[in-house]
Length: 138
Image (cartoon, rainbow, N blue to C red; front, side, top):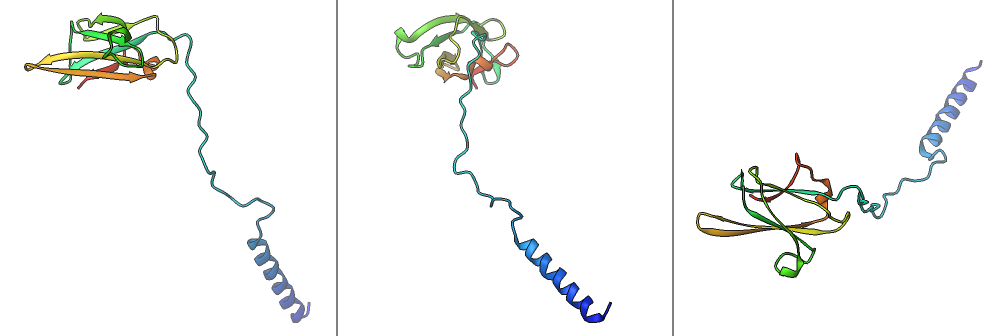
């Protein structure tokens, strides 16, 4: 093949590769979504029990009262649904709860002559177990 045709063919191949590299090959341009999709966790209707552990200075506290209250908090006596006392391991198990509901868990501890109040309001009580209880205290 004569040399001018080889050079012309090489230039044509180079030009086509440049065009191919600059095209989007039929793909749409990438765009970042404006907002992340949001999904609310679905309550498990089979879970109606919550486990709570009371600790003070990383030590379980036995024989202390724990209240289960409505989402309005435990400051109002009418909001208190159940009251239980912790066992020797500092734990209580609340039952007959409504799946997906926000509840408040409340306790008071008297250590070193000072009274400390702990309250936690959450709908995550359904993820608790005796091995993974909610913790009230420090």
